[in-house]
Image 1 (tube, rainbow, N blue to C red):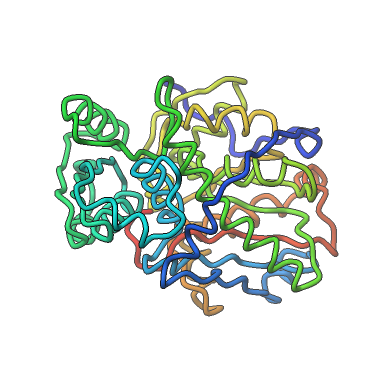
Image 2: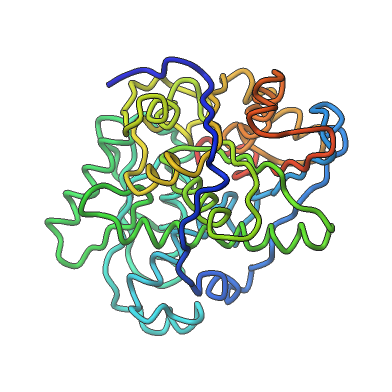
Amino acid sequence: MRSAASSWFSQSGARAWQQAWPPTDARRFHASFARYAPTPLHDVEALATELGVGRVLVKDESSRLGLPAFKILGASWAIARLLDATGASTLEALRAGAVHGPTLVAATDGNHGRAVAHMAALLRVQARIFVPSVMAQPTLDAIAGEGATVERVEGDYGVAVARAASFVEAQPDARLVQDTAWPGYEQVPGWIVEGYRTICLELDEQLSDLDAAADLVVVPVGVGSLLQAVIAHYRSGGAAPAILGVEPANAACVLASLEHGEPTAVTTRPTVMTGLYCGTMSAAAWPYARDGLDAAVAVSDADALRAAADLAALGISSGPSGAATLAGARAALRAGDRRDALDIGPDSVLVLLSTEAAGQVTA
């Protein structure tokens, strides 16, 4: 494994790259949940002044379908596709046919596993979630509180993924719901990416209501599935803002991959941005990052914690993984050459995706 050589990477031509996005009913499915509502888009004048731009808009995923993070969007749609090949049109229709469904299995650093467990409970099927040995007990308890069987493994997130996959191979009545892809396992992660598009569709409508257009969208990056969704959405024709990916300095696998021109695993070190604590990016996300991402930046734990505190002071609940986008915007816009690479000026509109509520140990 290699360590990232620097904290910044940019490339030209990303906004001209295009990739067709197939139609999906994911948002219609999400709207069938009683708790569905578009998440807020906060217009934060203080941050716009600080960053020297026209507007800073924060897409706030601190409460999504009853959970404190965005992950339920991908997990719910992927499970719907797994349990109903037609893509059940409503949650109730899916629930009616899933009483004797398979056990749902996932590995997680936190909120993905909780989302899978939450869906299993809604559908009255079993869930088994594999977690790294270092997972904090409150996070494990939150997953177990959804009714799932939780199993610690000796090792990190990657080891937990491997253990979940091997468990499913040995259990014919189990289905793996994993949010990272590897050769031979692409369909479910693809559905998860489709589910995340609901964020972008809501954002487009909210920007239209504000009579605004995004010049830069800033995305927190772990394995890269959310990043893949954002790039796919904004590189499928129409609006083409610059896209900035933000990673922990202690786990910057996308940055390293971009620097080396090929998927590159990195040796990770612990980080408070534990939802982004991934040493290997999703194989499915790599081509999107390679061709459609304008820039990537790595940020320190201290900067992410400061960003979370600053958002809290502004009335926005965000943990370090979600607030990483503010830290990343600060790191990207403090230097003139970086601003130029992103084509950011005094009238630009920035969108920060804040993907979790404060108090989340992981995402």
